Structure formats: structure tokens, C-alpha cells
Length: 53
Image (cartoon, rainbow, N blue to C red; front, side, top):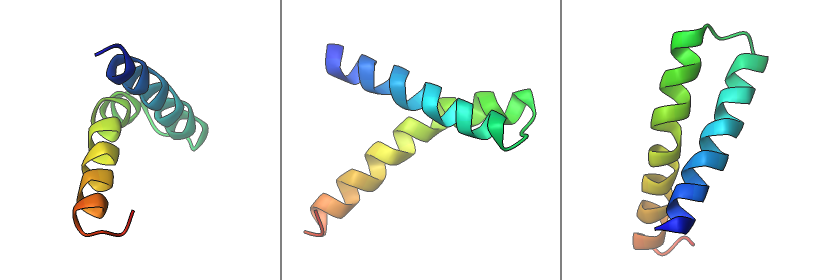
């Protein structure tokens, strides 16, 4: 569980910084940093299932 929590913290922070750097408003930054890590994990799971990773 500790690795997942660390992943979400780091990924969410990086996504928020990039979104903010690109000029997104606060609501978009919050949404992206909340939803982004889960979407990345889902994409990795799908790629692994299809044998591309």
C-alpha cells in the first residue's frame, strides 16, 4: 500500500505542476491530478494485458 500511495502522490504532483505550467485553471489542475494517476495505471494494465509491455 505504501508504494501505491507514493505513486499517487508523485504522479498527482507532477501532473498538477504540468497542468499549472500550461496555464490550466485551478479546477482543471485538481481534476487532472486526481484522475491522472488512475488513468495511467489503467493504461499500463491494458498494455500489459495486450502483451505490449
